[in-house]
Amino acid sequence: MTHDSLTADLDFALALADIADIISMASFRSADLVVETKPDLSPVSDADRAVEQAIRDEIARQRPDDSVLGEEYGEAGDARRRWIIDPIDGTKNYVRGVPVWATLIALLIDDDIVVGVVSAPALARRWWAATGHGAFVTGPGSNGPRRLQVSAVASLADASFSYSDAIGWAERGAGQGLTTLLESTWRQRAYGDFWSHMMVAEGVVDIAAEPQLESYDMAALVPIVEEAGGRLTAYDGGSAIGGGSALSTNGVLHPELLDLLRN
Image (cartoon, rainbow, N blue to C red; front, top):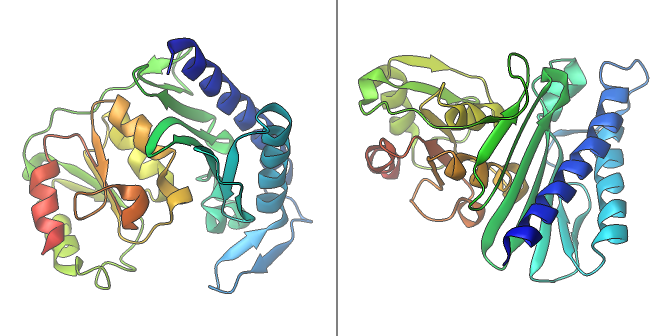
């Protein structure tokens, strides 16, 4: 894969995020936003569907040979190049008017996630990365893109830990691990969803973990955390995409956390 081809894919992913931001912000805190409940009782808004459909339409126009996996409309095609889309990660926040939500866009080639974009327009922030190209963020307080670098914190007692909530930890067999993390780390906050992991990439949080996720919840996060110098795996140390859970750290803390969450 050439430098130019990956740059073109990243540029395309950023353009898809631009499209998504326009649609999602138009309905955010809108009085006529329609919200339904999916079979798993999680909410889905008409904005979720509109964002994903717009992204799919643009991929069909610009990358017709690529396949797509999205939260709302499932799989289309089986090409080795696959775009993985979560149109609005943090829908529960979105429908209540909480600004912590984002569109997640990733490109998977064979088994490697090579591009990731996380766009959170209500926070005025966007994170992105491509393999070998570094990870970057734009947002308040930065004049143009700022390169991301994880922290160097080496002790659990000095670490800041972020998660979403306590749901699913016991079912994953990691309930005691959550208790230990809450009791043994320096600081604990539930920033939640994508934001926890992006803060790890920024170096302002040292550990982020979620026990129950789908591939579209985490694909875009992986290259951003890793290009910032961190690690993002499943709780068993394997691929997060196939493992259904996500542990992000600055890398230094990762082995200790894997031991903790495997038990």
